[in-house]
Length: 251
Image (tube, rainbow, N blue to C red; front, top):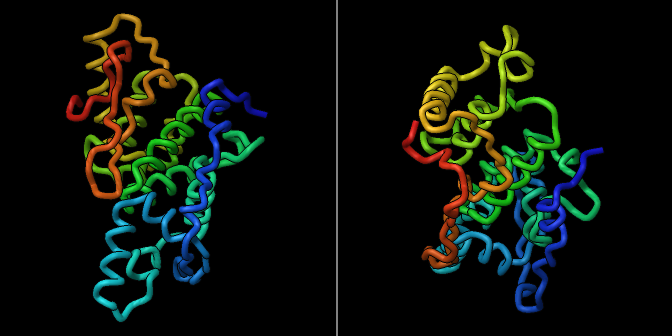
């Protein structure tokens, strides 16, 4: 059983985002090719992402001849990933009650991050980053089997890419062969390996004995928060005491 860190416990104790005004009308969304149905409160969806609110407004205004699922662009999403999204939407947390990072896979977390990235849900992106960092400290090994999908869908300088690069550069070694060996190396993006080399040279020039606690500098991998009108709400603050790692464009 994985140990929960103080940070994890703090996130688990959050109050659910339940209030009367958020329970107005519900919509039925049919997600994925399987047309899996989800009944969700409209206001919760609109508060979660500016894109959902914009598409809802456009759908109502233009009386589109398409389903609301198509209007919100969830008809091609993975139903299991959407189920995790709805858990977070109603509880304001990914892991529930006594669950630990053992109860969610690397693959699920990456899929949830990509979903939130595609739909413009920065709060969920940042929450996934927090869980990824907690899981990395409590798990054994490096999730190298997720590198291809991360590099396929995330652009240069994206927070998720930077996190994987810095993990490899600052915490992994070649001796344990948990993240790179003859069996795995052909499935690791060459661009990632070049990014790691650059990061290691940068690290070497800055620190003689780097000892990075990713839990203390997790904000470095967060995206900026915006409100439903698309305006800045909570800017990222990495703090003066955080290690200068993962800066966009630094590799």
